Amino acid sequence: MRRDRDAEADLPEEVRRDVPRNGLRLVAANALQSSGDQAVNASTVLPWLFHTLGVPASLTGLLVPVRESGSMLPQAFLTPIVLRVRRRALVFVAGALVQAAAVAAIALTAAVGHGLLAGITILAALAVFSLGRSLCSIASKDVQGRTVPKGERGQITGLSTTASGVVAITLGLGLRVLGGGDLSAGQLAWLLAGAALLWVLAALTYARIREPVPEEAGPDPSSGWFPAMVTMLRDDVPFRRFVLTRSLLLVSSLSPPFLVSLAVSSGAGALSGLGGFVIASGVSSLVGGPLFGRLADRSSRTLMAAGAAVASIVIVLVLVLSRVPAVESSSGWGAALFVAAYLVVTLVHTGVRMGRKTYVVDMAEGDQRTRYVAVSNSAMGLILLLAGGVSALLAVWGVHWALAFLASLGAAGVVAARRLPEVSTG
Image 1 (spheres, rainbow, N blue to C red):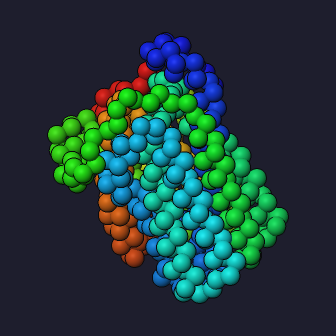
Image 2: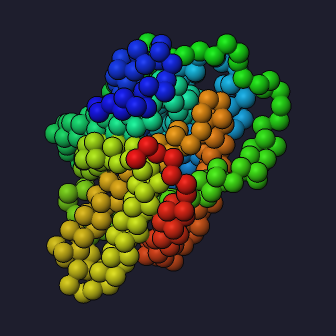
């Protein structure tokens, strides 16, 4: 990892001493967590598990909302409590252990459960998992801001993403060899049990991070969290603009499932089977990790704008070319189009995610950073439900309408991201 000596000089002496060791531990812990995420993916592994267990299809549609919104919505409520904890790394450790326990419960259900009851149990465990993820999300940005200087934070995220990409590709290849296109519930149970162990290892690694501890804890958690959230969004103009921009960048996160449905309907064998989906996700992480990590440190707002632009352009090209008879879904050209579009959008989503994470860490200091992370994530939980609902409703009339809506969001996100103030070191 390339170090920024000028930025490190602004840190206290005791923090500068531990930057290399803390950086390695952050990379290792985040890589372990991201690798575990591949096995509890609400867009690939868990829907596959539901199908294998005979869970009613109506419950499958709840997986992504429970996983994503469940990890974002509680953050503004949890933040006043987290601020009372002087050593924030312990908050991450607690969140990782909660996730490990929840994934272990899902693994047990996969091994012995079936039908509607299994689906409800897994959804309940996934809700607990999301609560643990909320704690990790709040704490991780603050710990990174305390222990790693500007100019190196994006690289930390990039290296972690690269490592998880290697794990994902290995896992995907293993799934293809082990079960091909027909994995059993028992095989998935072992996969999930291994993921639970990864979160335990992440907790142990994070506990070894040396962070500066303030002399006093944060404010009294008895103050109302919702009024404080509304006040921050109303009065803090730079923060409000960031939240608005982030909501317009959902194009890269919400469009891949629709592109997958088109790819599957095209008969694109490269994406058929669970292993193929995991491999595609791993390739995006492997390629995007080292590339986008450094770009985020140079200009996180530019990275967000570029990612949204590429995703929107790709979607528009898909919408136009899919109407051309020579590339209809049953042709080889059509299959190649949808597979390539899926991979590119997934790749640039890696960049958008790194850009927004780096931006929010760089735009504030101390407890203010913690509040920014929590309030923006809680707001995004609501916005994600709204945008996901609109795109799902449009998909009733056709996937093309949903993709057109998301592409228009992305175009607006490009303009909004370019207007954000620069907070990176360049």
